[in-house]
Image (cartoon, rainbow, N blue to C red; front, top):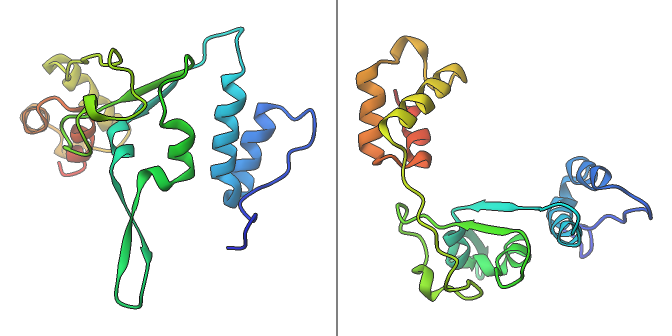
Length: 177
């Protein structure tokens, strides 16, 4: 792609809705739109604004993306080289960032070693209880992620115990019922 092809000029007086529509319409500018959205929303002081980022720890390790170096070799790309990650990764500003660090996926470094993360930022969120897991599995059935004819109490409990109550893993396993 040509240099600068990932940007689109926004007219003066554009709204956040216009900005989002631009990112949807011009997919080549979507990353720039997301970065600009973060910048614009960080200026809002009237109402609280929150960005919740799941799997935040994956932003501190290598991605699945690769860049060709020679005909026979590729270089793995680190997450910090991605524009979106750079815009959202630091948590040292006093605005709207929440990063959900997952211990179940064993991705990245331990939280205490992560740069730009305050030491008191860690909150432990419990995994799903059996009742919550049942509710989630019934929701997946209504959304047709789980086929109704193959759904049973025994099967959703298997999903719950296999995933140890981890929501992301439960959703992934639900497709196999």
